[in-house]
Length: 118
Image 1 (cartoon, helix red, strand yellow):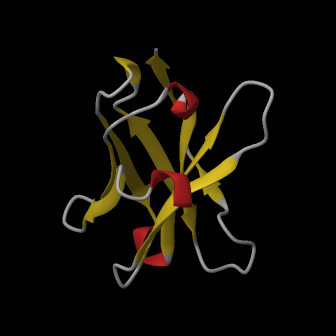
Image 2 (cartoon, helix red, strand yellow):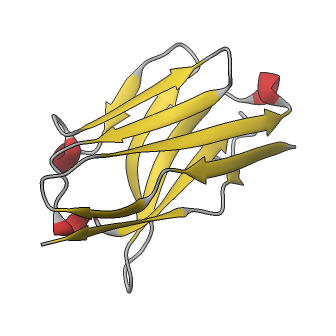
């Protein structure tokens, strides 16, 4: 089992920045990839960013140049640095882990709210 706990959400004005953290615990050796997803009210959950075991990263197109995903191997913590935030970035942000089971991201955190005011 893998446990994921997000933190760092909050209310920020458009153009501002936030850094989300995701602390992982449990069977950490089983984690292949980690990622960030978000879900806005009335919308489906969508991909935001991911980082692989080897450190390769990917960010959704409309966040490239604004969002950066990284991790601290020593503390098993993943980060999402979000700059130049826009009101459309408002959502609950979820941390996820892929244990290599073939099911994709199979562990999820409880989410942290990000609200960007205009």
